[in-house]
Image (cartoon, rainbow, N blue to C red; front, side):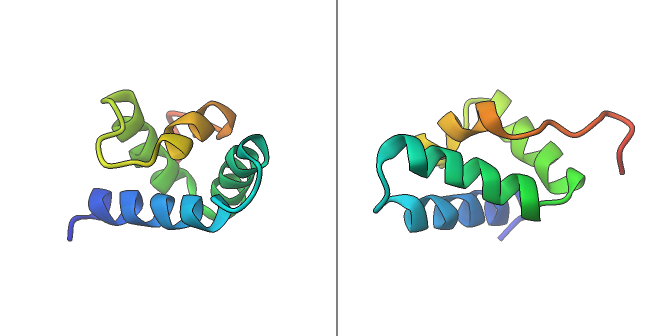
Amino acid sequence: MSTKQKLVYMANQIAMFFDSKPHDEGVAGIAEHINKFWDPRMRRQFFEMVDAGGAGMKPTVVEAAAKIRRPRQDAA
């Protein structure tokens, strides 16, 4: 499994955890989790995939991207 496939898998696992919450709360929870626990390198790869269409990602993950901090371009 490639790094990008692992990120999709992890993002979808986070989304599955929040599936039992009301929609808006779930989307916010996904974003909060990724903002807290994913390093800038992971978030950069995440946004590369989202910007390319989010293939394989649950719709709530793609929706949460609007609330996830994009890493600075010069961050490692």
